[in-house]
Length: 433
Image 1 (tube, one colour):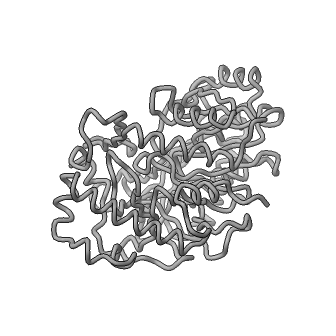
Image 2 (tube, helix red, strand yellow):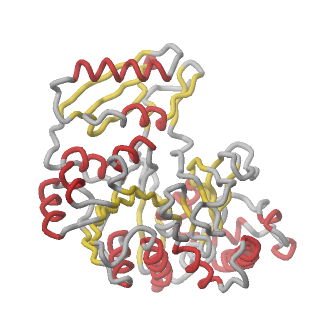
Image 3 (cartoon, one colour):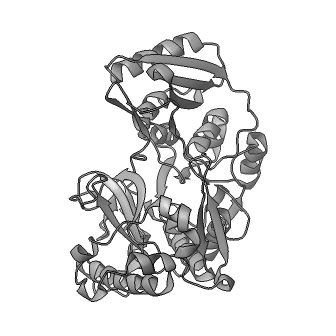
């Protein structure tokens, strides 16, 4: 097994004395102290947040763990106060409203150097799955300057790999023609949209697509299994968010969790309630700190994602840590009569069925779980509906009302252009219990 290309890249960028966790931790601690000093000096938000913190008293990573967390809500309220550079140095501003709700939006700021760092990560991260023999299609926003598609295309060009930025999947027929004409071998895209494509146009995966990189949302195991087509298509997972500078980590050929961008980001897993760090192997909330960000450094930023560090070294042989594939967002759950229903569990049930192209999930008044299924056709919808009910009831053994609607897909050849993450919506009034 080939060691992840990220290992040599990180070792070179950090100039580690040795390829070891101890050496990497020493580098990260030095960078954390530089970030704290930079943010305290340059950022109005962190100047106030850190005004009572004596940086000279922080002598270990354990001391660093006493620094207060940064939350998404604080970015929404005080976004411009995070910025550490002059307005003329800002090259790109990304406005986020990923929840799909009204209210304040998050604005993330980047300098040209910040964008170049992301291109650098993308270039070496993509080497985990593609080489010069591949042609890549990016089904993510582009080609606007500084967009994911733009940065990926520039990164792949540095490795001599052809890349077509198609944009978020909208016109299936047009995109299928592009795949055929350009002999695309690898797709980078949003999990549910790539799955939709594979179920509407399965012949593309039999004839052309041998690799997929999924990004922007968490990836259910059942979705990976469906796309892998009994091993004929390798499915890689990328972990990142705009706040990270888009890129956070990517799976190596072992396909057993992400190796992280540890030269630019310091990751922690914490107990989401107490805020205390958890031991490797235990699940918790992912928290990260930027190490080299110019425009908008973030310190102990709470992502809301659930994951864990694996305790066994990766089979590829790297000294880098491995984070298990993110299990979804902690908040993507509801409680009915005191019992938890999590989006992840419903995903694993529903994605088992090849005829389901998409679905929406919500809890309505009277504690009713409402499932709307989008099917390729409704010929066997009665039998499918009965089997879906059986599996949901089998998994969730407590009493609750379940309502399932079945609809035939009316979006083909177009589907909604959306970067909003999938959510289990709770539409009940009052307390969610």
